[in-house]
Amino acid sequence: MKSAPDKVTTLKNAVSSLVPDGCHLSIGGFTINRNPMAAVYEIIRQRKKDLHLYAHSNGQGVDELIGAGCVKRLEIAYAGSGRFAPTCVRFRKAIESGQLKVEDYSNYQMTLRFMAGAMGVPFLPTRSGLGTDIIKKWGFSEELRQAETKIPEQKLVTINNPFGSWGEAPKLVLVPAINPDVTIIHVQQADKRGTARIQGLTFADVEQAKACRHLIITCEELVTEEFLRKEPDRNQIPFINVDAVIHIPWGAYPTACFRHYDYDPVYLNDYRIAAGDESRYQTYLKEKIFDIKDHQELIKQTASEHLKDLIANPETGYANGLERGGE
Amino acid sequence: MADKDNQDYSSKEMMAIAAAREVKNGDIVFCGTGISMLAAMAAKNINAPLSTIFFETGAIDAKLEELPLAVADSRVMYGTAVNGGLAEAFATMQNRFTGSRVVGILGAAQIDIYGNLNSTAIGDYQQPDVRFSGSGGACDVASFVNRTIIFMQHEKRKFVKKLDYFTSPGWIDGPSGRQKTGLGPGGPEAVITNLGILRFDQTSRKMYLAACYPGITPEKIQQETGFAIDLSRAVEFSPPTIKELKILRERCDPQGLILN
Image (cartoon, rainbow over all chains, first blue to last red; front, side):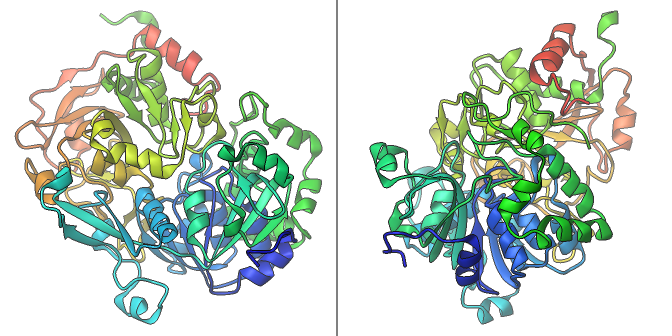
């Protein structure tokens, strides 16, 4: 599959074939930017369940997957959607009610874990977290770690620096590699073979893309190979890593996509309010996800004047002067 | 005597300016979402024009023509020196050459007398009474850099003898705490609250009251703190000036996204 010259497919196909129930998944983006939301909604629509999700700080996408009941276990550093939800609402509810097993890390630890996976080493060292409960308190029990081969036997391990005083770090924290079964990222441009270009910050998308067994790329623009190869220094992901390419304009909506559109403050505020109330949340799921055929339909249903306000200024990459207040 | 015209400011404005004044010209400033971002922007526009704002998402020295609502907001990506990713951002802090120049601005749900922070959970970790967002980059910053400034709401339940969950390291348990733990030198420098400013004793590394905002007594602050603090060094904090408020309101947050 990774060697195919043309990997363009539909999101429906990609999700049904590459995201089985119970798989270990990671998604790209960060809080309210470049989350692969079209794919998140398709996963929810296909009622995937028992997912083991890895996240550093993917706010909106993670919260929607949790809220819709797709996630059984979560390894995460931060669940917030900026000012729109300082703590993600469905995440908080799921943990407080004991429905979701969670294990906490820091953002750098999660990044290094993906990087270790991408590098093909079992762990990487850092000085982050020494002395804290992030090391001491495990979210997953020893029994679960023994039973589930895809989770390392220990959470984090502290060691004395084997090089002695070299590097002025007497102690180090070893963080275990993550190799997701499947990773989904949304990018600005890709060609049909899967070579991809991210504009703006890459977050930990590139590490994730290279750590996973299967990689699904959704893109704002499907461009020619020739176009991307004119400036290869601007490309981050080579086609050799990619399994499927799906062209979905507004594919990160309602999160932002630099140089294309801003986040949608109205959607995100409405979501937070709905997420806080069971009956409103069920209505949200039905109206915004289950009753909608696909992401294109969600975009079609959103008032075009409203979408126009979100379109990025080509100079700044965001929607200058966008009305972002309101509750 | 305070100028009549500058009496009208909110506690958020006071906090943002208090934190901004802690930033030194030339500092590399790590900040998160909300008031900490506002403080960093205020410092750059008022007292530390050569400071560099940078975000854990990988953006270095963004133009920030509009206030970002998240550290991943596209507004942090515009006009930067370099747009990278998390790996570079945290390496910049873990690296001693650059990390020693970074001041981190953090917030938390709970703090103890040594400036250790909880931003994860209240109650049992497995099934907490209240769950928060989690560390994000806070534990990384607190582990790596030599100076941190911490924003807190000053309430007894937030200034606690023992954290429910220890997310980010401060001075750990005293003067040799960080060294014993294997962390670098330095640690929390100031805690900026809605009532005043607390600092850490050079010898004991325990929190003490350094300044009260106008109209707030040291006794009031002790009342709102869940452990005994030294009040003897408290002075009255000089309120934001007209110039500081003007820049904060008109340049940093003209839409009132954080201040209102």
